[in-house]
Image 1 (cartoon, rainbow, N blue to C red):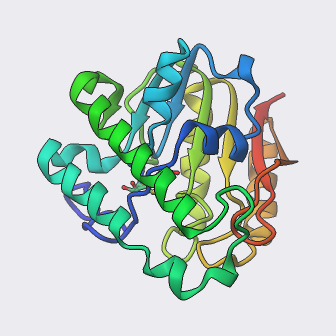
Image 2: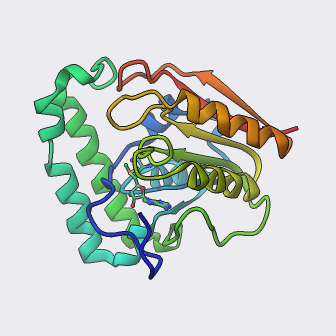
Amino acid sequence: MEQEDGTIPAGEYVITARSLDEYRAMFGLEDGQVRGRILDCPGGGSSFAAEAGVLGAEVIAVDPVYAMGGERLRREVLGAIENTGWATAHPERFVWDFYGDIAGHQAIRERAAARFLADLDSNPRRYRAGLLPELDFPDAHFDLVLSSHLLFTYADRLDYDFHLAALRELLRVSAGQVRVFPLVDYLGGSCEDLIDALSLDLAADGVRAERVPVEFEFQHGATSMLRLRRG
Ligand SMILES: C[S@@+](CC[C@H](N)C(=O)[O-])C[C@H]1O[C@@H](n2cnc3c(N)ncnc32)[C@H](O)[C@@H]1O
C-alpha cells in the first residue's frame, strides 16, 4: 500500500522479471502489435522494454522501484529471483507447459533480469519511476498499454477504488487498447466479481471491457486477459 511520501514499502510487491516471450503469450500479442509507443506498467524487472526496443517499439516502463537507483534496484531484482521457495513449495499450483519445469522458469527469469539490468544502464530513459493511479504522461500518449501482475494479482491489498482509478488512468494515457493479465489473484483466487463490477463502471465511461482467451496458463485457470477499449 502507498505510504504518505508516495512510495511503497520495499518487499510488499515482488519485483518479477518476465521476458518478451512471456508478454507476447500473456497478452496475446502478435508480431505486428509490438510496435509504436507502448507503456509497460508496472515494468518491474521485465526485459519487455529492452527486447521490444530491439524490434523497433518505443517502450516506456513505469514502476515505483525505479526510484531506488541502479545498485539497490540491481540487488532487489536479483534477490527476488533467488527466492524460488514459492515454486518448490507449491509446484502443483502452477501449469508448467510454457516453462518446462522450475529450472526452465528460473532460467527465463535470470535471462530477463540480466537483460533488464543491462538495458537500465544503457537506456535509462526507458525506465521511469511512477506510481499508479497517477501517471505523468499526456492523454492518448501510447498506442498500447500493458499491465501485468499488479492489478487483480494483489487484490488482497489494492481495493476496488484503486483498481478503478488505475484502469481509468491507463485508459487515459492510451490511444488504443489497455491489456491486463492475469485475471486472478496471486493465490489463484477468482477476481470475477471485481472484474464484473469494474466493467460496469467503465461501461458508464464508454469503455468496452472484454475477457480475451490467451494461449498461456501458469496459474491454473488464468487463461484470459482483460482488453479495454473506448467505444
Ligand atoms: C509482480 S511485479 C510485475 C512486473 C512485471 N510486469 C512482470 O510481469 O514481471 C509487480 C510490480 O508492481 C509494482 N508496483 C507496486 N505498486 C505499484 C503502483 N501503485 N503503480 C505501479 N507499479 C506498482 C512493484 O514495484 C512491482 O515491481
